[in-house]
Length: 212
Image (cartoon, rainbow, N blue to C red):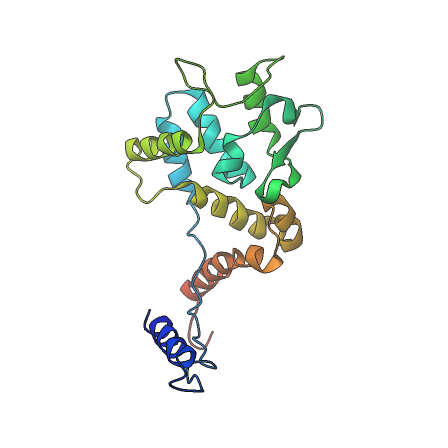
């Protein structure tokens, strides 16, 4: 950007001893605060689930929506990391840090039925060669399902935002959500509440009356 170019220019001038001061040194640019990724809508999720022709693809959508996993974390899930009795899944996230998540018992039940009683290894496999699907291959499945459902602008992070905003609306516990999402900073997690506040404000504004 322009400021970066000016800083580089004045740095060069100082290094060449053409000038002793740098007028850009104390210049700070105020960044515009933006809303986080727009959450997937409930009706969009329902539409996508309705056009799934394979249980594997349906479960990919459900696990994303009910867990808030990153697409890379979803791709690396293994059957042996699931405690079926406790209803817990061990996830390896950013920085190789482990955390536990507990998706809906209904979703876990469907996943258990899909994998079978003694499943081991990667959860998501290709249909023909039975090889582990990469994060990019799973993205492609999501895009294809969205296209069949005629839903635009769908990407994996919208599922994560969907889970986060739904969690905030139901439990209003940002700190617990931070643990579920595997965030280092509470500030990062708190940004998801912006959508919840905006939604609540719009709903209240629609009922607003002068002199009420």
